[in-house]
Amino acid sequence: MKTETSALEGALRASGDLKLVAYMMAGHPNKKRSLEVGKKLATSGIAALEIGVPFSDPLADGPVIQKAGQTALEHGMTVGASLELAAAIAREGIPIVLMTYINPILAHDPRRFAAEAAQAGVAGVIMPDVPVEESEPVAGWLRSASLDTIFMVAPTTSKERMATICERSSGFVYCVTVTGITGARSELPGGMKEMLGEVKKHTSLPVAAGFGISRPEHMKSLRGNADAAVVGSAIVAEIENGGDAVALVKGLLKACR
Amino acid sequence: MGALQELEGVWHEAKADAQFQLELAGHRHAFIGRPTPLYAANRLSEHFGGAHIHLKREDLCHTGAHKLNNAVGQALLAIRMGKKRVIAETGAGQHGVAVATVCARFGLECAVYMGTEDMRRQSMNVRRMKLLGAEVKEVASGTKTLKDATSEAIRDWVTNVRTTHYIIGSVVGPHPYPEMVRDLQRVIGDEAREQYLSVDGKLPDVVVACVGGGSNAIGMFTAFLDDKDVSLVGVEAAGSGIKTGKHAASLVGGRPGVLHGAFSYLLQDGDGQVLPTHSVSAGLDYPGVGPEHAFLRDLERVDYVAVGDKDAIAAFKLCTRLEGIMPALEPSHALHQAGVIARELGPGGRILVCLSGRGDKDMDSVDEN
Image (tube, rainbow over all chains, first blue to last red; front, top):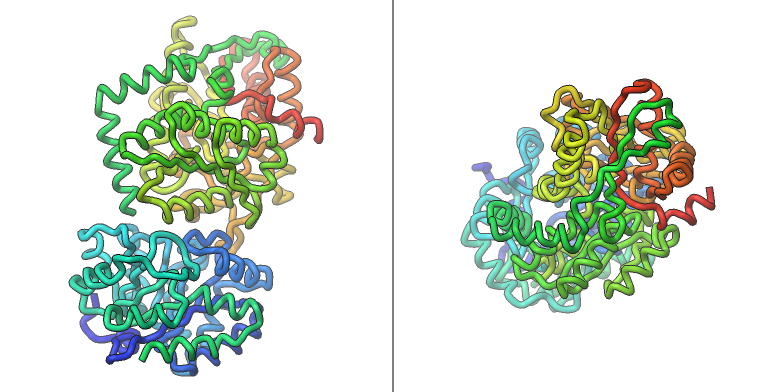
């Protein structure tokens, strides 16, 4: 939609290497630790950080992210506190993408949400339960606040819808590599390369592959086919288990080169 | 979105297809047992001061509730789309049983998602589904009731969408479900209106139906929307009382929001998080409501009220003792409200109630309370 290149678009454009986008849930396992982990991830070499805003009914998420969201809500995480967290992490100089279901945005007031997210230094917003056809006027308000709007393409998306999704996206296009919900898979589906190639035909934006991506060998198979990979559940599980999420990310980054 | 667009297309095609309608009518007659009778509840009428109360006997549908009207229609659509696996969510278990039943009837693979809490309070329906050959998938996340069972069914559907049709049990969820389920349930009101007129040529003053997601109510109301002299009353579950916060009355006590792909009234906190619900009846225990009900509320065409657990249980017992009809707890909410309206109207008043299902499944809940 936009003619100038956004910070997000620039950060995700592959330059030989595959770029990595890490996902974390705001307020998981609690507010303090999620800020610590977020800051460390921001400076680990990733291209952008995706921060999930917890929601009671996360339809697109598998058990790992569902549980993290529930834990965050139990610890009193809110939309406002998620924006504060994003602001603190954005100060590390990393593009931040918020992934949030639509109802918390509606309850917060979408125009206020757009203004506050922009103020917090957020670069873009993903709304997994908003199909592109139903995205106005909220997407317009986000764009007016200079936020990128990232829409998702799935393996079942028709070519006509793919064109619309690419046309209406800014920052990058999110390519869901599996039919289904978030969560680590051992192998990526066949047909993924063809799908990424098809999306590339419709857009000059960077294309990021996500859902099910968790292992270094996945990075290798994406290199040259996608601009970036999004890793979520594997990182969230590491945080949940008290492991070293940064070490996990560094291992994945090695496979991106 | 692809699957929803496919479904919308197939539904509109089927709706216009005389052959499909003929087949549906055949199954309605021979398998569901339609038309269901309109019954004059004379002893209830007398008890409530003399207004005439009629019951539309959806409890006499095969499997014991109006849910089968929708399940049969959508099973035919699944076959039309070449999908051999069917999934469903269920709260009270009546929709789950209806789907398991049509899957047995048409030879389809079947999985039903049900919350742990509902499996406990509706154990008889769990056994029925298993005997019918369905896999009952326990949902232990979130509130462990209908809302979370619906979320889990949607997750299954997006994962297996190429082979699977999702039969939503109410007028909720993304388009085209609310419209399609309404179209399949409107047979209730179409029949009832004709039957009522044939009694003495007049229409009722008031039509009453319970509202959880709202499929029996929409099915009943649709036929009467243009009859400006007929008042329509939707009865939600007030649980322990609206003021206690322990209820399931989305239209009476909620605000607009998005859940499961529909923009409608929703029980939620100030931050947009969906709130847990409470009702003695598992079938009304849902924090959202069909978007068409939200529309009818905002148009002020339908009056929505809420009735609590205790009043519903009392109405359950009253109807059982006075009429020899054991209603489900869901329409017992509507029966209580019918009594309130009957006393207001007095002798000569004319009330039609949708008795959406039978109460055998609720005996444990009634004994507990």
